[in-house]
Every structure is written in structure tokens, then in C-alpha cells.
Image 1: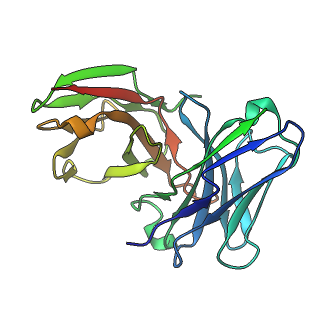
Image 2: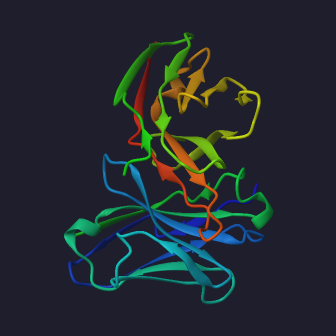
Image 3: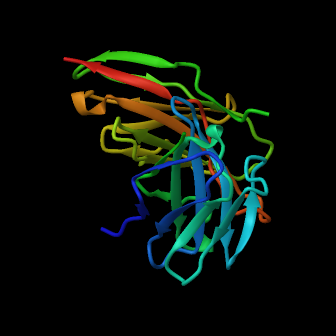
Length: 117
Length: 117
């Protein structure tokens, strides 16, 4: 069964460093998402990406964040200068066609646990 | 404004019994979808069940059913015949259709379910 793949599964970084979280969505999917879950809290939407551009972003997704789909298969989230409060589980998700926008679940990757020290 | 509310931070259920996890939502959009995800201790997000706002019947998927009460804006998850493997965090989520949006999911705070042998 096709799945969303995220790498790495766990990353530790120094405060102020840049990190890139990588995701390979399911191949025929058109919508891509990043979500964040701070330990013990709810899952929060960061950004959605469709047709090679951001379709929506949350207040969390400030200038320190960026997303890219560099080669048609990978979907990356970059945090330019990490802060302690960026420590969280980051989930990538993808969804198939526009016709199914309402009733199709987003398929989530297994997550990348980012720890900023 | 918070749009998805799960009022039960934690629930206990005896193995083989049924359990209901509560979820209420708020939206002014007539078209929306409601989802339940399971998050075991390993961290991944597993899709369980979907209910559309126009669906006439309550959704069912195996041991999972969704008690959808539109007028009360509630979408409770019912798990029948609980198993030890059902112990996990459960998240209710909503998708609004908004055509200028990419179909993001808005999550509740989650309910931690513990199944007792």
C-alpha cells in the first residue's frame, strides 16, 4: 500500500540552526500539507501546498518557515533559524484529487520528531 | 476561535466493552467533513472514519462508528468491543470546503483512551 514517507524520523539541532524536514508524498496525490504537534498537545496545521504554490498557511507559518517541492517527488519544510519552541513532531500529509477534496482523508507520514537544544 | 472540542482528556474502558469518545464542532460552512484519527504511542496518525455533512447515515468502519448529530454539532466516535490495541490518543478533526483553501484539517485536543484487560 502506498504511503507517505518522512525523513529523518528524529532530528536534534542546535538553536539557531537551519533544518530541512523531508517528505515523499504518495505519487498521484495533488495536495500536500505540513502539520505540527508539540508534545502532549493537539495537531496544528502549518501549510498546504497545491499546484506548486502555497494555498493556505497558518499564523504559525511565519517567515522562518518555507516549503518546497524541488523535484516533483519530495516535499520539504525548512525552518531557517530554529528556536526551542520549534521542538515538536512534524507530520507531512498528502491527499489525492481535487474532486475528492471533501471526503478523502489526508494520508499522514510517520512524523519527524524535531528536538531543538 | 476553537472549532473542534474534545472534552475528555482521558478515558478508561474495560476490554470487550464499547466506548464513546466525544467531539463537538463549530462551523458556519454548510459543507464540511469530520474525521477521526488514532495516534498510538509510536506517534503515527491513522485514519479511522469519515462523516460528510450531507451524509444521511452515520458512518461505520468495522468496530468504529460515528454518531453524527448535525443539529447538536457533534460527531462522537463509538468503538465497539474494545481491544487492548485500541489504547491510544484519538483526535477528531474537521475539514471546511472553502474553495480558496487547500482542505486543511482542524484538530481537537485529543482523548487518550486506555483499555483495561
